[in-house]
Length: 171
Image (cartoon, rainbow, N blue to C red):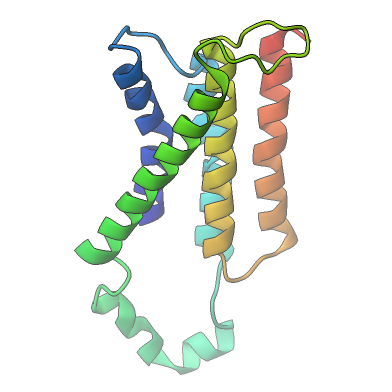
């Protein structure tokens, strides 16, 4: 549950940050197609597989030691302190994934070899890529039991971002 709030904080807050730095102009940071595919394509599969496949102890031990389930009854993983930590982590990651590309690429800064200045769509694309990368790496760091299926899900998320960019760029 905490990760779900975290990943949505990381994708939504950069849009608010853009509002602050642009004088609330109403400009969008992300392409609509990318933004709509975030929860379905870029961050859903790793979460579902994490919930279904992840295990910190083997099946035999989990059935023979019922005390392992007491952490759930005591709300050790879902309480206000743990949830606050996830929210603060989401805030920190949102600040980093927005402001580093924004200050590096906007306001006339040139990163193209042909001398053209960057536009807001390029900055938004970089921010969105970093959002997808960061939330999927966070899911990977929270995973105890990594299998080829979870590796595939994380790879698919990144690969589909490349496919979407190819489609949106007209390539």
